[in-house]
Length: 482
Ligand SMILES: *[C@@H]1O[C@H](CO)[C@@H](O)[C@H](O)[C@H]1NC(C)=O
Ligand SMILES: *[C@@H]1O[C@H](CO)[C@@H](O)[C@H](O)[C@H]1NC(C)=O
Ligand SMILES: *[C@@H]1O[C@H](CO)[C@@H](O)[C@H](O)[C@H]1NC(C)=O
Ligand SMILES: *[C@@H]1O[C@H](CO)[C@@H](O)[C@H](O)[C@H]1NC(C)=O
Ligand SMILES: *[C@@H]1O[C@H](CO)[C@@H](O)[C@H](O)[C@H]1NC(C)=O
Ligand SMILES: *[C@@H]1O[C@H](CO)[C@@H](O)[C@H](O)[C@H]1NC(C)=O
Image (cartoon, rainbow, N blue to C red):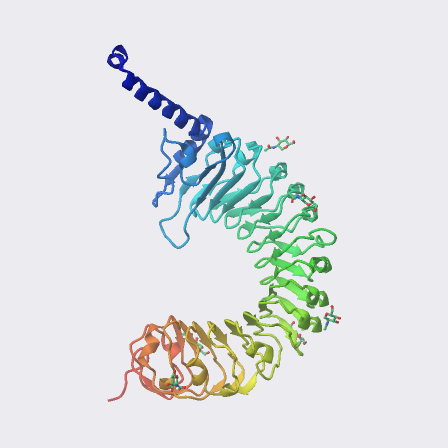
């Protein structure tokens, strides 16, 4: 440098000036030193990053250009968004969330999703970020309690801790987070009951508390508030008592109501028929009894209805739905007699489960108007006779067919086994013929208690998949006689 400045050539001077200007411009574009330090601190608490999610995070380079970093206001970091890819086994981060992130004073959104091995307690640094509005720390391994001080985060517009290992109760101070439009604490290990104060969170569009160990009745928190709630997920807990009346106030907008896998009892309330926007209703695996309200015929927009594994009884209302996508009424006290017309006429159905629904018909008499989308058909434990061969010949993408415990009589060798098929259960029927080789590619198979005969082709299935036939032989059954 000394040599250069000692012999100033006009062109060189120009060149140096341009160079200096460039450097200055770059310096102004680079992120703030506090932000860089905060992010490098985060990186240093990461102990494994096999897919290189943080590979671009290098000291001395502009941190606003690092993967997952967004700078908006005056080149200050406003969002940190790191997401693993669930389908790639090495797409994860191990380690903890460094408290150094508290230096990101302009941070508005923190998104740490599907990183799987990120562990440690609830990150206390969230309390030190004055501009933080959106927190999505999902599908990681954070544990311990959600602190009672969470009520301090009053600016939050969305909070999701879905898919971690938080234990203990939902802090009652959560009722102070009145700006929340989304609260998702699903898939953790939370216990205790739903705090009554949740009724203060009037701006919620999504409330997810599913897949925890919450118990007690579902409190009457919905009346008068929650006018924008679209998604209510309380599935897979231990909630008991009745479906609360105040849910009726959600009628105008609620699209997803998921209360399945709980201990709910009593009747399905009439008012559910007024839920004009209802897309998905899951009430399965409870102890609901009585009839399904007639008002259900007004659920014209419902796509997914699962009422299976309850104690519901006849008559089932005729639905005026244009097209249902998935229906499960299995294992109740229904005697449907036949597969309802509103199901058969659906142009978009992919999953039909009517096990033990008192269906008495010939399979050939079921002529669905569309078979193209069918993935799953479960008609187990009915009184269906005849043969499914014609229908299965038309379902090109079928994944599972369950028809155990009927009176189906057909030659198994004529059954088309499509490439997509994974599950086939024809046990306890009157199926005859030989076992075709093509079954060996299935994930699960049950042909027990039929009239099959001959040598079993090589498969990985246990003997219970073949027992009780007329003359099947060879592994896993005793050898064939020569
Ligand atoms: C939460 O707020 C209370 C009262 O304003 C304060 O005393 C406490 O230190 C705060 N806690 C955290 C973790 O910021
Ligand atoms: C919450 O709802 C109220 C009333 O509907 C509205 O004035 C306010 O802007 C909403 N807040 C947010 C954060 O959406
Ligand atoms: C369906 O809705 C209409 C209009 O809201 C109402 O008059 C009718 O009684 C409802 N049907 C049933 C079976 O509840
Ligand atoms: C199911 O409902 C019937 C009446 O429809 C009742 O007799 C029976 O006890 C109920 N079963 C259970 C397990 O609740
Ligand atoms: C299955 O469909 C094919 C044409 O797609 C037809 O040739 C065949 O006869 C059908 N088999 C049965 C058993 O219906
Ligand atoms: C096959 O079905 C029979 C009768 O339903 C059952 O006992 C057996 O456990 C089943 N085996 C397999 C492998 O699913």
